[in-house]
Image 1: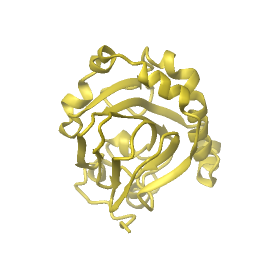
Image 2: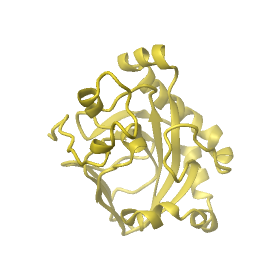
Image 3: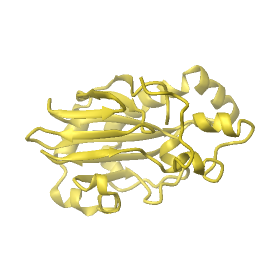
Image 4: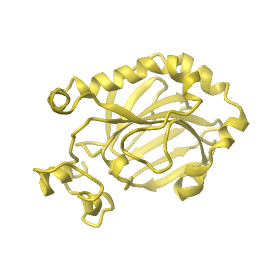
Length: 226
């Protein structure tokens, strides 16, 4: 989702149990799901475990995968903090009155291998551009640099941060240990993207209505980079 700025801090959570569970994952579990890194060249140095995930990147009716049962109790504080952050905003309260509560469309664990990176890219898929992409570092080191737009940060463990995935973003793990993030994609029902508010203010966003801006056939200039 596009917003003014590159990173938006949501809050801190106790991530110790999530970290312990992530450390307990086996190589077999990390190697089981290879669709994401095989499909997208920029993610070739990553490994992914889906908790709530669909390869077709649908925007509703998400699929809960078996590993979610292991992580779900420890996930609840992070899920609540993210949902409250968006739903208790002025925009969120108004949308809830009209369309109901929001939902998590994806929850994934992503490992970036030591000494590797994720090349600069922008998210172009409809669901990715119409949901709030929140990162929670579970295992990291001081040499992991996350760049969004023209801003680079080291994201500490236990901090929930939304990234502006409509801007160019990349990650470099310059450390000697792997990095693991939990990535949560949260949807506010009825929320329009910034381009949608300008191009079709009287109709809902849809893959058809937003394809030109989602695919950047028409560049989005709603929020110029700082």
